[in-house]
Length: 217
Ligand code: DC
Image (cartoon, rainbow, N blue to C red):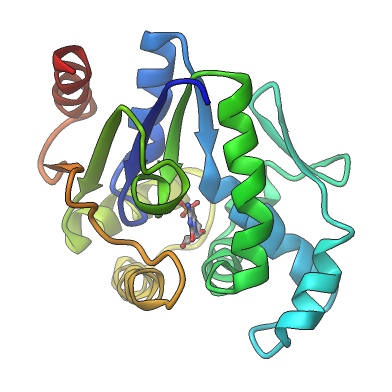
């Protein structure tokens, strides 16, 4: 296992922006585990599965799934799905299917393999607690629901999606609830993870805090 910087937190806390910047600064690879869950969610939906599918059906459908990162893009069975996995619907299904044991088992190996090949900045929901509990830096990046909804609204509007901030706030609350109350690998702050609240902070301020933490380790 190479060196890992693990970052967890709820959706919209700014994990990917910060993780990408740290990876660049440190010369580490960036592992976006949400993208893996999104690609698998897309695969399962394409196979006609929904939240009612039995574990055995989910497991069988995973046999035909191959997810890869290449040059900053996400490929599902050889096709670039980088755009498709970013829709609100793909986020919803990623959250729904990520609660399923066969999905978590399938992606656990892929995530740990990535850390055998390169030093990593890995971000998601269970990096600090389950996937890389021995990471040399562990961070829980948080922000208020209001701030996350505001950021998400701007991000979706910039991509041309129709947006309603109140509805987005509600979806964020539902996603937080689902991701943090599921039975397997729920989102939670590890006892030894450093807590950073990015509400009201700019990217540079948060990045400065995280890099400061890393340099003190
Ligand atoms: O970070 P994101 O919004 O791209 O993640 C989409 C969903 O994937 C998230 O709602 C829960 C799930 N996920 C997870 O369960 N574990 C991870 N390590 C990363 C994401």
